Image (cartoon, rainbow, N blue to C red):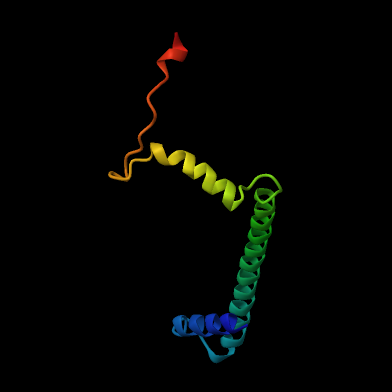
Length: 103
């Protein structure tokens, strides 16, 4: 409600020179209030739809069996440690190819 009131007064101030008479203020205020309320309602509806979709996506990602436990994760990263070059963080060294398997 505060946002609507603020927007009404901002618009009244900005358009103060274009309102032809005192009688035109009430219709102007009504129109600004109506448009501002509709805009805020649409934004809120859009925000709620986005939140629902994000929650649904989060539920899909957190389905049982999709996430690694912390112990599984640390085991996986320990296996990668020999291949990571920490002297140059931007480079990643890979193990040499197994040429015996190619023969």
